[in-house]
Image (tube, rainbow, N blue to C red; front, side, top):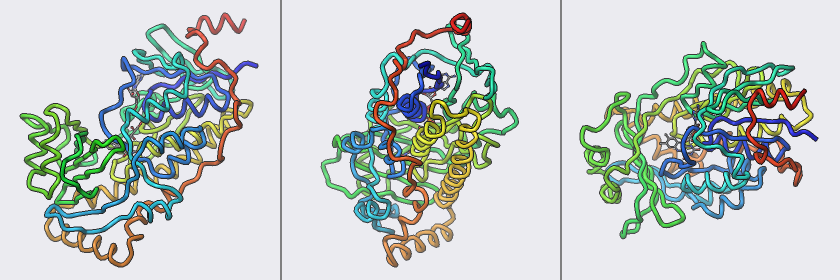
Length: 416
Ligand SMILES: Cc1cc2nc3c(=O)[nH]c(=O)nc-3n(C[C@H](O)[C@H](O)[C@H](O)COP(=O)(O)OP(=O)(O)OC[C@H]3O[C@@H](n4cnc5c(N)ncnc54)[C@H](O)[C@@H]3O)c2cc1C
């Protein structure tokens, strides 16, 4: 039987997990990536139980968990080292039905990509949506360096500055600057033991978390003008901003290789799109719902998108109805998460001494009244369950991605 053909534009976490989910439900999938290789940024990523359950659906949950460190032990501190709130990874796991875990992005991307035949992924292939097609008839068309390609389904997984989104919804203003910038570093573990922590200061925060391989993933955020960059280098900038914060923060920054510090301004889409699909084209991940990283949910939501989309697009189902069901499921949920992340960002951006003192007092009082109060931020997010538990084993016998890349003209010839 002819397996319907899907082309995914973008091989980030959203694009790759969507490709695997569609592949497992019987689609013939090709992923096109403009970068020369699949090399995610050198940073960690936290996966809450919601994303892990989605990974379970596509058969990858156990493997990913085995490569990740449990997160949630430690707590929140102030820059002088005072504990504002203690958190407990076991309590988090009990509350949400599983642990919050942290792993290197490269490990995640590597394991998800390995679930596809290598020939399903084409790197060095910038693509653009030429025609979203109509769900009832005309195929979608994308432009590639090899010429136009037709597909029954195009997935725009091209990230926060998505060009696919611009074609589908040209009137939407797109993401806007969230008012703060971020830094990320990976360093060897410090000799001195430390408790994982997130430290909240005035208009700035710092987090230090261990990875399973012994290294440390640390991140900082601070209110800053959009596009501002250190005149010297970002490691020096981090020392200026966080060098007098409690241990181990200064040592972590000093251990970073000069030039290895990643800096990204944060953009978000608090005004949702009118839909996540049009015609035969659909958006997943940051392309659909860019959010601030303050809940660590951007990638998690992309993984949820993947399994919900595949759930609604089982081959044989009506494409238009399936895409409408995907939008109906995902748009309200992701809008709520985007807005919650924006609210947490506003707390992080507070910089007046009085407002910061009130924030810290509230945090520590809430924590003393019950450790579960801090975890409540993730209620309704981390406890999400996918629409189905697993795909029927071996549903896809199609030689996914092993078919030769064909252009529009060749596809048309083949249909004659
Ligand atoms: C500081 C920071 C910390 C974060 N921490 C977490 C966390 O702990 N947990 C979490 O879940 N999320 C986290 N996030 C958010 C997370 O990184 C993103 O939500 C996630 O990576 C989005 O994945 P994506 O696949 O949608 O987009 P991307 O990862 O941006 O992938 C898009 C891909 O599309 C490709 N592309 C773009 N245009 C084209 C084109 N024309 N043709 C072909 N390819 C194209 C790009 O090269 C890229 O590979 C964090 C974000 C930041 C900034």
